[in-house]
Length: 328
Image 1 (cartoon, rainbow, N blue to C red):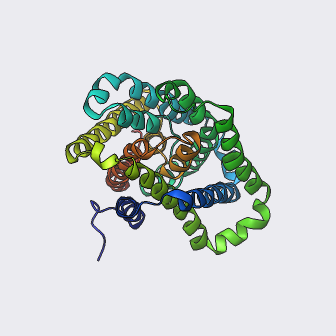
Image 2 (image 1 turned 120 degrees about the horizontal axis):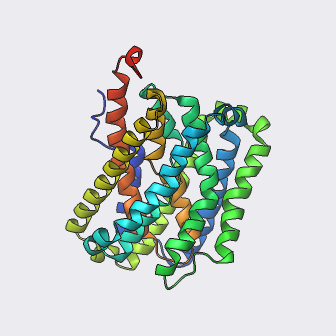
Image 3 (image 1 turned 90 degrees about the vertical axis):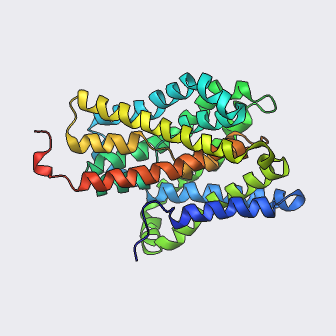
């Protein structure tokens, strides 16, 4: 029996499970310190594997479609942040300062890779271009997101300087260096990764679950559930859904106005409107090192569930169209 579309996937359920586990049995003290070191190792391994998985040839094949990539890049790193800043007078009174920072943080993140490509493929869009744009978004996002955070968020966090040299060093050592090493070793490692894809998936998802558990353990100890009520969670859900709807509408009409073909419009829609949980959670741990990140991650995790559901429905509808009528 197929899983209903409105239900979360298994990984989403595991993330919810980590939040529940952290709420009931948060890790603390010396155990938390050791777990933090293990989490850093898992993050480095995650980006090493991402580097080993990414095909340079696929990237080169997609680079020629520069107008499409520029449009996706603008949606991801210009339009999203501008919306996050413009909506502050509305969102901050509704959710409070810390949850607003979480909304702003997700607005500064790069696009997803796997799901952007998967939804573009399901919807019969331009898959090579989606692969190139989503991959490039994550690579450049390792630099752009910390830079944007240092400009727009660090001023609001009094306890920690997110633009400090130590944060930059952590980005380089835990994200960039492993990624480059993965690219260097790709010719030898890729056959192994392809053969043992399930093991790679365990590392990929496991590192995210570790960060979520550690982050919410710290947040629970500091009283996150005394700060976030059911009403606030509902309001946050609505805010995330409205933000996604605004972005999708802007991308849909602007890509049509710019004269892109239907397959390209689909790639722009799915790559430009989505935000990465896989990179966003590890990045938050590094960028906000020493800062409680439970409330900052909460909007991202909720937005992630909403975008998967909405994009899944849209991809199925696009797939049912008559491609012969595209661009007529």
